[in-house]
Image 1 (spheres, rainbow, N blue to C red):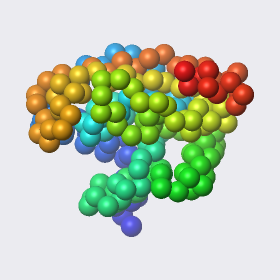
Image 2: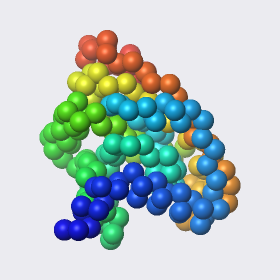
Image 3: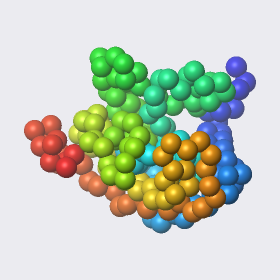
Image 4: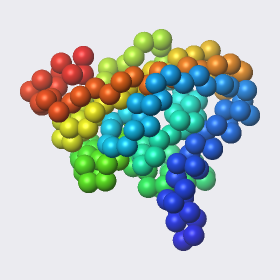
Amino acid sequence: YVYPQFCRRRARWIIGTWGRTQLALLGIKVEVHGLEHISNPGPAIMLFNHQSVIDMLVVSSIWPENAKVLYKKEFHRIPVLGKTMHSLEMIPIDHSNRALALATMAAAAKTITDHDVKVCLAPEGTRSRTDGLLPFKRGPFHMAIATGAPMIPLVLQGIREVLPPGKLISRAGTIRIDVLPPIDTTSWAVETIDQHIA
């Protein structure tokens, strides 16, 4: 009971410290540009390009106040990490069940609206194994239309240099994060969702 309460009260500190500590131990430095775009209060949908497990550490290292991440339910199988994410009230998505996944996205949209939360997720849905982006899922864009919350892209560069595809051990190096200016979504509509995804 005490552990979940502590996690909820100190969520930003726990997540930020965890990310920065792990990166330091791996010899990975993070160069951040545009941090002010996620430092401002208010709701937002933060999207990052997903390439490897290192992404979690990098995004965690700049974690803003009152933010939650949408993550694969399979993470619950990982000792400590699964329990901690649950205690931090992060939002699991069951990709094996479309109806449940849609219900989760709708609940996340309500959380954004009701509590001015920033939600962080990968619009590709899974990690890209190539240098390019995978097609974006529609879920984050439906969420933006439902909430009117701005989208804030987080562009991660240098991930593959520190953890090449197929490798299990990372190298020391520098990763750059560009936090781009918020994209206004208040005029978006379902009828034009393909344009916004493009």
